[in-house]
Length: 340
Image (cartoon, rainbow, N blue to C red):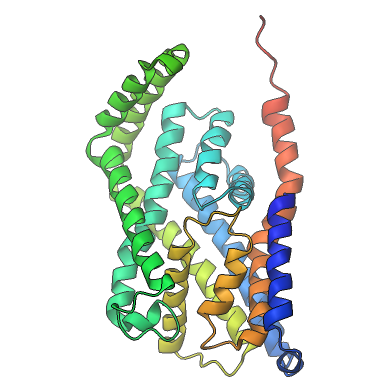
């Protein structure tokens, strides 16, 4: 936990020193309306957590209780906060779900399905937002897609990477799950992995079976998972919209303005998808301040960034510090060691 916290605090310190405008901060009118918008943002964060828990419970077809799903989402978010890129959480969940006695194949299929849904949210919605709002959506001041600044270049490169692994996962999960079994069998034959050959072959076989079962589920099952994914990501972005309006009440709350800010945030998170720091620490705070600079003066952009990260990042670090050790003690540390 120490490294991401230190990086996050360093970023906040940087913003304080270079961008904080004390006069602008004093002009923030901390009214009941301000606190109401902040409370709404907090409720949206809770709603996002519920959506993710609903998705996990649906994917496992009710194998996990609601309370267990809520707990596991905390572990998911906690692990994502401590690992580089947004892919750290799903990798840890492969281990976590296995400890909950979900079969390895079903575990892999469940985690891959969440990755398909999350990546699909960006892959499928971004072209729509770009068609509606054009280049200015990518970064303040952009007038053309030919204006290949660092932000726009990073956006298109990251989008292509996300599109590539999304298509790969869709292919393995819904088109040719037997290829996953063949890949696992190929890995089992490698000299370095031969000692785990039986387990790798079993995972491949179970994954193929679980993927086949996924394809056979009714449309209602998949619709619930897609709806939960859309609800979770939408709650996350609208939460930031609420914080912006709370701190800068002059920002219009009409549908077009708020939809544009929402689309800008989707673009920002696309670029941050492969952040090299744990949980995007440092980068996220700086990025948000820059991406909303045409709505929030940079002198107080740090306030919005700090509120956002306190709710969506530091909160899970603190909550996870209590839940994860208890979960490890109950599920991992308490397991008897095999003889010999």
